[in-house]
Amino acid sequence: MQPIPLLRARLTSAPANGHVAFIPQIRKLVFEYCNDWPTSANTRTFIRRDLIPFARNHQHVEMVVKQRNRKEPIVRAFYVNGRDKVIALNKLEVTGIHKKLQLLLDSSGQKIKPLKRRTVESTTEAARGIWSGLHAERPLL
Image (cartoon, rainbow, N blue to C red; front, side):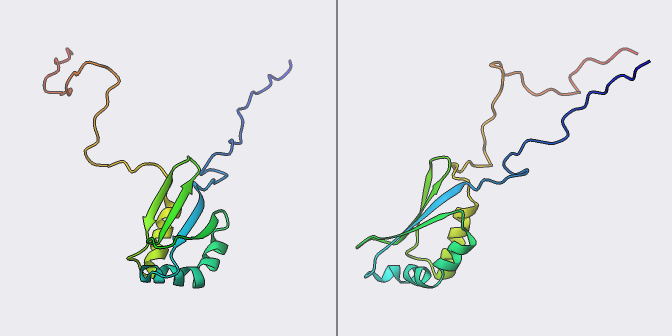
């Protein structure tokens, strides 16, 4: 008598974001500042002193520096899903700029959805109410 061959499932899993491979959601950061305005002083300091080490630590992100005359300094983040986010840097110290950049790096680019007061969505059209064990029929033993 011959042995019956065993059918096995696949033991490896396909790579997905967060399992084997990680695809960062941010793709580009654009720094825009003015050379003359005093509100851009901290941004200029960050660009001169900290931008190159920051770019070396985050090589997956393209960094662009643009002059924007007579305007407030901003940083614009572009994401893989086609969205972008803009943050003003005029009232931030250099450490605050670091925190805002880390916020942009950790973000996915999706719209912010509130966790509280979310609407209840039903798969059926009729509202049936909440089931309660106090109102159910008693089982017969």
